[in-house]
Image 1 (cartoon, each protein chain N blue to C red):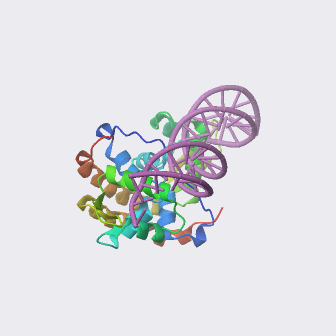
Image 2 (cartoon, rainbow over the protein chains, first blue to last red; image 1 turned 90 degrees about the horizontal axis):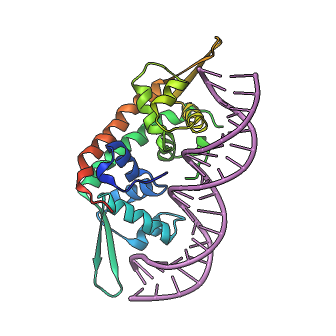
Image 3 (cartoon, each protein chain N blue to C red; image 1 turned 30 degrees about the vertical axis):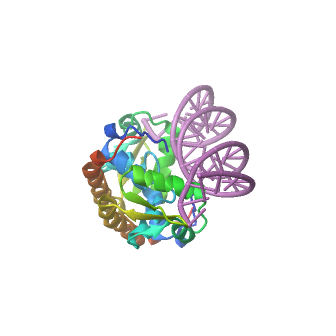
Amino acid sequence: MKYDFDMKNLCPATFSFQVIGGKWHLPLMAILSENETIRYNDLKRRLDGITATTLTNALKELIAHGVVRREAFAEVPLRVEYSLTESGKELVPLIEAIVTWGGRHMPEIEPF
Amino acid sequence: MKYDFDMKNLCPATFSFQVIGGKWHLPLMAILSENETIRYNDLKRRLDGITATTLTNALKELIAHGVVRREAFAEVPLRVEYSLTESGKELVPLIEAIVTWGGRHMPEIEPF
DNA sequence: CGGTATCCTTTTAGATACTG
DNA sequence: CAGTATCTAAAAGGATACCG
């Protein structure tokens, strides 16, 4: 899906959809919503199968869209914590409503 | 994004997201929600830039997911009408809620 | 009118190796 | 620990031409 990063001139639908549009974005939001903060490698472990490259890219997109916050602590070993912003937290119940819809209507459809 | 079409064994989140996940699926749902029924070429004209191949594929996916209905009339010239199913109509306000969220939070973010 | 068939390009995700 | 760089693979979407 083509991304148009001149987001100031985007319609809200396009913007919203870019926020939740990646393969891992929704699972990522779900895990973040269950934790006040979570570290990079803990996130990676909970997203079974994701690679570091993909996780880093997904996080960068969520941060750029203002729904995730990154905090780095100058410790040894290095500690980086991720959490939802207020706007990210507001999005969670809206996503959940769509998931609930899916749960109600999934059984109606036929497999290909 | 990899599609797993054995949808009987899918989690609701994955299912829901597949329904609204294509580049044109959301615009398509929007136009369908504004019309009781609409014909193939009218749909194509309203989706500026879509090709017949892509429109047909998107419609097939929406139909397979149970949110769109296709009715063909044996007339000359041929007439085919598309409309939202009940489950499709239920989905519309949930999508709108996310778009509204986008409208509120889009201005907060910085362009890349 | 309402598509399909074939081929091609763009976009997105993953593998692997390596670094501050 | 928390990434980056480079390369490769796989999807999704599009162009063009043609059909019932």
